[in-house]
Each structure stands twice: as C-alpha cells, then as structure tokens.
Image: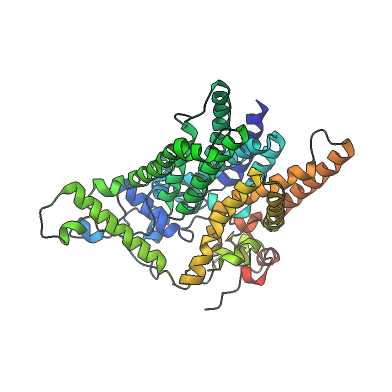
Amino acid sequence: MLGWAGPILVALFGGLLRFIRLDEPKAVVFDETYYAKDAYSLITHGVERTMLGDAKDPIADKRLITGNLDIFKQCPQPDDCASFVAHPPLGKWMIGVGEWLFGMDPFGWRFAAALIGTLSILIMARVARRMTRSTLLGCLAGLLLSLDGLHLVLSRTALLDIFLMFWVLAGFACLVTDRDWARQRLADRHERGPVRGLGLRPWRLAAGLCLGAACAVKWSGIFFLIAFAVMSLMWDMGARRALGVRQPYRGAFSYDLPGAFAAMALVPALTFLASWTGWFATSGGWGRNWAQATSSGPVFFVVDSVRSWLQYQLQVLGYHSNLHEYHPYMSEPWQWPLLIRPVSFHYPSDIPPSACGADKCSQAVLGVGTPALWYAAVLALVGLVAWYVATRDWRAGAVLLGVAAGWLPWFYYALADNRTMYLFYMIPVVPFMVLALVLVAGLVLGRQDAPAPRRATGAALVGAFTLIVLINFWWLYPVLTAETITHADWWARMLMRSWVTAAPK
C-alpha cells in the first residue's frame, strides 16, 4: 500500500505546483502560438489550417486572448488553407482534449500539459521504486522531478516537449516492468525444462505503444525507441545467460527477437500512423492530394493517400534538416547540462509599477532547470559511468543509455547541420538525470543492514541535498510561473548574464 500511497502523494504535490494559477500568464506564451492553435484546428477540422496574421502581426493570438475564436484564414478551397506543420499530430491532439473540455483559453490549452506533467511524476516515483526496491528512493525521485524548473515550466505551457518526455518515460517504465516479468517467467519455465519463447509479453507491447506515441509527438522519439529496443533484447540475453540456459544468445535471437520486433517496430509504426488519422480522414490537410496532382494515371485512394503522406514526411524531414533560423535564445547541446542558455518564454514590457509597488516590475516565465538539481545530476552521471564500468549494474547502464539517447544525437545536428536548438530539448533526459541522482543517493544511504551511524550520515547527506534543491526551486518559482515581482527581485534570480542577454548572431 505504501508503495502506491507515497508516490501518489508526491504526484499530488507536484500537481498542485502545476495547476495553481495555470491560466497565468493570460497570454499566448512562446510556441503556444503554434501548438495551441494547431490543436484547436485539429479538434475543429481534423487537420491543421492556416491562421490569421503572422509573427509581426499575430492577429489570431490577440483574438484568442479576448475570447474571439474567429482565427482561421478563409480560403475558396479547403486545400488552399492547409498549413504545413513540422511535427506529428499526437501532442497537439492531447492539447486539444483540454481545449475541448475547458475551452479555448490559457487554462484549456495548458490543461493537458499540466495533467501529463503530474502523471509523469507518479510514473517517475514508481519506476524508481521498482529499480531500487525502495519506496523512499521512489518518492525521492518523484519529488526531485516535481521540483525541476524546466519540467514545471513545460507542464504549464502548451508545447509538445512535455508529452514527448511523458511517453518516453512511460515506455521506459514498461520495459523495466517487462524485465522483471520476463525474468520471472523465464526462471519458472527453466525449472520445468528447456526454455524457448516466453509467449505474449504485454509490458513490452505497452512499451512499443508508448514509444510509438513518443515518435507521434516529435520525431526525436525515434532515438529512444531504437536505444530501448536494443536494451530490451540485451536484457533478454542477460537473463538467459544468468540462468545458465544453453546458447543464451542464440536463444534470444531465435525466440525473443521476433516478439521484440513486433513490439518495438510494428507496434510503434502502427501507433505513429494512427496518429495521422485526421489527415487521412479529411481532404484539407497539407499535401493531402499530392499523389493525384502529380500523377496522370488512375486514382487509387489508399495507395495515393499513402504516397501523399510519405511525400509529406519527406518534406518534414527536409525542414528539420535545414532549420538554421536565428533565435535569440537558441543554444548548443553541450551548453544544456550547465543551463548556460535557457529560453525566455514570456517577459512583457508593459507591467505597470503599481503591480509590484516598485519603480519597475517584471513578470517572467523562464524555461530553465533547477540549477542545484542539474549540476548535481552531472556529477551523478559521472559517478554512474564509473559504477557501470566497475559493476556492469543494469540500472546504471539503462540510465546512461537514456541520457545518451536524448542528448548525444543533438551533437550531430549541431556539428553537421548547425541546426537551431533550445535547452528544452533536454526535457526527455531529465527523468534519467533524476534516476542517476536517486541511484547515487541509494549508494550514499548504504545498505539496509549497514551500521546505524553509516545510515544516519547517508540520510543526512541525502536530506540536505533534497532541501537545497527545494530551496533553489522555491527561489526560482516566481520567474518560472509569471508572478509579478520587482525588477530587482527578478534580476537577483538570474544566475548568469547569459540567462538574459541576447545571444550573438
């Protein structure tokens, strides 16, 4: 009972932080200008349509804040108003559910992000508990995730990245559960005779569904899908070898690989394809009739639809490969772990002095992680590398793989393509940073049978670190949640000049 009660209480705490004043700021924040409106278009028309205005004159944004939903561009033909979008639809469909339930306003378009952010805290606590066999460490993991500034900001903003993080974490949690389930079943069957296949593995199928959903939010989910598919198969090999099964590697390839391919390739592909149902079911999507327009032969609805869809995906790939547009808060992946260049999501210049009782007031939403947590996580990851090299502990390996899958691919895009990137691309990695901290905390605490002074010292160190993270988060909270404070108070919370000054072109 405590194994669920503790994580649920931690998730409720994190949920309060995310839902209180969720409708603040009452503005279209940063890239909400794309995703909140695209979500509304999906639930209204089934596909993304072109909106009124542009970056210089955001007519649609201004109308939304006043409650005017007349935001779509009017065209003679539906095809003429089709909007090219760079990301798959699932995350926008999820945002749209909140808009459908609560209305097209800041609370409505941020509701799904806050809910998903809260649920991710619960999953974080449960997967950490399973990996460490400690309810205390599981609750610590959930608490640390709830106290991360970047996680909080993205849980209170209608961007796609919190949904990507959620599905990646859920997929990882399913695979950790599948590891325990498969080892138990393998041991039971080994006692009765020769071991072949393990039959249907529901948790691995669920993992494939979740990781396919991650790809259906953002294409970068593919990095985690590939890494975790290989990891799951390696776990199968290790389980067979640990039991002394004859020819463990051959057995894994013969009996486990076919099921793994179905769960980690076919299921994700079908999930990704299903997320485009609105595009297939309507005629107004971008490039929907490309095949018919470029072919003089007979029209075959299904074949031509798939051809048009594949052409659309190639266009999206080309867009991401050639995204070089300057942005004042862009950053490079090697800067992310040290929080050198966060993203200003919201900073209006028209706050009246009467709002804070000073000569100058500030209201900010800064997309930045909690420094005490992130800097400690960097040290913990270094320690985890040493731990894995020395012991080959599967938990350390899994966490390091999660960090590598979410971080290292961006080095290629930075060096080869000079792509425009932002700190919040790291959000899928944050749960693995937290897991690194929790695994190291377990080492600091020591074994349960360790001498009492040793356990007390470890508990004091872990408790002190948690308190530091809590204080650091509390200090930053006003500039994470658009509280109106004095300019002096805002400036005091800027850890580095690079948090506020424009990046060089």
